[in-house]
Image 1: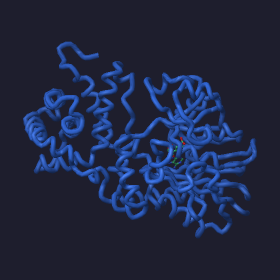
Image 2: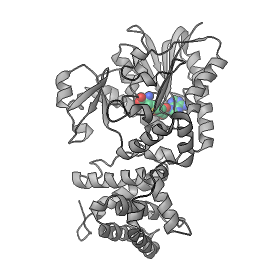
Image 3: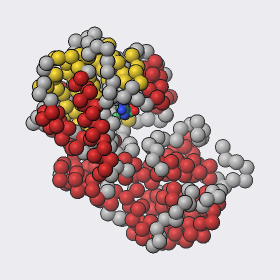
Image 4: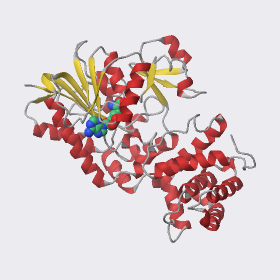
Length: 433
Ligand SMILES: C[S@@+](CC[C@H](N)C(=O)[O-])C[C@H]1O[C@@H](n2cnc3c(N)ncnc32)[C@H](O)[C@@H]1O
């Protein structure tokens, strides 16, 4: 609710500012929910502002460079977040009105003790942006991807894939669900259509996820169609013991339980492990949950299968989390690769001879996918490839690679499923002795 005498639209802008500021400081994007902004129209607008600022981050960077010769002021509280939201509105959301962008930016800045001395600067920068808005609206789209991703994705996946990635970034991700049971009536009630196996895509939505039919009863969970591929490839007998090594929030754990395995779900993040437990409870499913480090966990007895959905740069999720594009530097990829290798080595230690390992990452970076597969081949003499067959990923023949792994990216996603899918790498191996 707006406070008395407060300008209309200020509350939602202050919330949007707080959210964007936290993301710029390192938080993951999550939409503003009804707990924060009860009014659904305010909430939709606040989320529209934040997502536009995140998707257009690269173009807004160029505007800031041009408009502020001396760069962004240091230790200036919410100044940068207010500026980015206001530029997003002025240039890319003209239906919301330029006047409100400039006026409410000033009101936000006035309420922040660390930024209020910069009110004049904010006004001047936004007025200048307003007079350049038509030109800024036509800035080249390649600015939407950082230069290093642009060139490496172009080299790796081709020009069409880069174009498709940019389009996917601007469009955002549709809502995909994995069904607990095959229930045609539920699919109709959800206004969803089938994609692959038990993955469906919600075609039109007029309410929040928690208010959709079947959510409270745990009849489905949110999971991108690409993210749902790895767990399906385990293909063990019902009752097999399976370790889900980096399990939270549990999308793949629930798939493994659904497949009839006795599942141990491991994660080292307490808060995320709580979410995993809640998600399992909602679905009426049970698994053993262990909080431990995937690189060192030593089980009492070995597993028939291990699924390792390793922590990664998450660049494959850029449609939902545009911030990942601007966060990962080369150094952090090197660190992640080392962490992933420690986890892979332990995954092999946790497997029985004859056991199956599925390794996957929601990354578009070959260092975290294809190169890790090659490294496994060099490092471990006791593994054999279990190639993923084209039939195991129906409708996605281009995703199947020569070495039996699967690679999805925006380039091949564009022609499928009308709305694309996350970027993923998946490989499957067996411990031979
Ligand atoms: C890509 S997410 C997993 C998503 C999950 N598999 C799903 O489908 O819902 C990676 C997970 O790895 C966990 N993680 C990161 N480092 C870890 C470690 N050293 N040991 C165990 N889990 C770890 C994170 O907490 C995070 O939940």
